[in-house]
Length: 412
Ligand code: SAJ
Image (cartoon, rainbow, N blue to C red; front, side):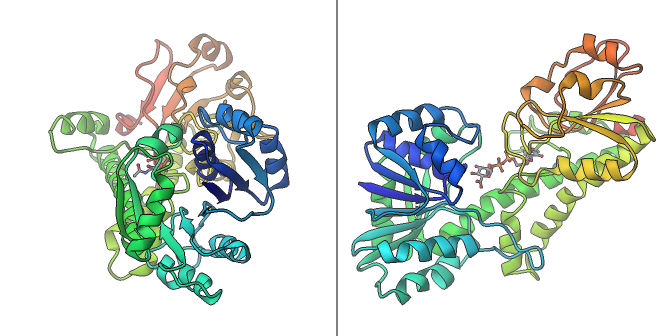
């Protein structure tokens, strides 16, 4: 089977890797020339375990090539970004539409087109299907169209792409069958056949479920700070109940999924989707909450910010709440030095430089490197070491170091 994958990002590239590992011929299309050139040399641009080896071998075996333009294939998979439109929170389908329009001239009878990008409910039927119908295709008869959302966790993408169950939302039942044949090339989880609109809403609701639960944990933290209870103990103890799973509070919710997908549902039914919007607002309020407590700990001075990725052990900083927090603190007059071992940015510094003369270490991301910091260096470089751990990852600190986390905010 020949597969053409539009978009070689966090999902498109691992998906391409797996098809090529499973003996399909793969063309990975991207609009970024540098990325394409590097991929053809076997050099990948994302930090994700396992992908690099597969792409290098596939390039060598000629089962994978990157290109700026798509080619004729049996199946086309669209994995391009779908941001939200700031004015009305709706799903920006422009990249998906462009990708679909680009492949139209290459399509042949019997081809399958799969949209993997997360899209708002009804997008496949109302916006994407007409693009192909206008080109003369009869969906379900001579062209097969489906929405099959990816459901993988960054850091474990390869494993989850293979083993997770997969929702296959065909525009018609025939489309679902054809799309499941495509994923059958490498997916070992169940292929669950359904309608496109059900697949769209299921995907958005998965991330909304998580966002709402994180909002609940964040609200609990605020309540505990107000009334003087250790929020982390509450979570630990409540979670001993067999049917309770309170999530972890933090500095806010980042990433391209939880911070965005709930809006796609909200935009479709703004009068009704009340909990969903309130959860978004609660999570968006966390940077402000963090800054408020930073101000209570130190009214001015230098802050060493540890971590700008949106989640631990990844190099992904899309929608990261860290940037909001940094901007607010800079605006309030603090000197900020950011250190992130997973992100290369011009203005980021080493751990030693970040903490040098700092008045506060502010942990915003749960990278493994931050769980057991070098306390010897900290006591050398900081006069009165204080750590504010918004990810609650530091178990304890040696004498002479003050630790604040979401368990003891009320002591500040
Ligand atoms: N977070 C918390 N508290 C928690 C869990 C997460 O504050 O208890 C924060 C994280 O720090 C991060 C954000 O939420 O900023 C999102 O992280 P995440 O690990 O929950 O999710 P993502 O965005 O990396 O991946 C999610 C996953 N969805 C679900 O678990 C329902 C993944 O399976 C999806 O494939 C992905 O979204 C996606 O592409 O939609």
